[in-house]
Image 1 (cartoon, rainbow, N blue to C red):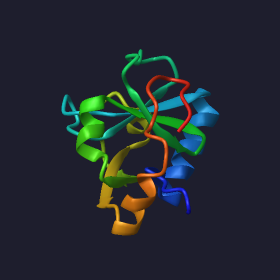
Image 2: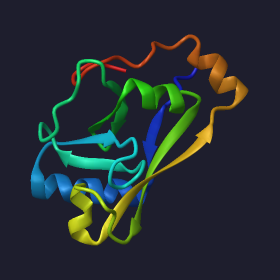
Image 3: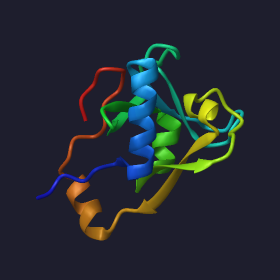
Image 4: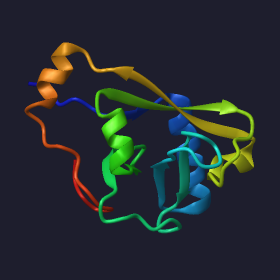
Length: 132
């Protein structure tokens, strides 16, 4: 049974991530839950935001860990998230805003087949260095 990917990124977002890594080094993503820029993913220098031991590492995009709170995971657990990038300035501290860009999260519900496959996959783990 194929592994279901919970978080992915568009080629355009991956290019911006690569550009930000070249400028800033190791990065991290945190799916915001409402403050400032609503529910936009925030791209930060790794360690710039302290993660809670209960935060969930959903996966990686462009080699960068993607995290969210347990309450966000409860909401998003039935959907695949795709990080994209658009022109404009978000109202956040995310690194891409300095480029005149804004990361956005798009979602789609998992298919019945994907949902069945997820039942056999490990639940995303807590913490900064947990594997998915």
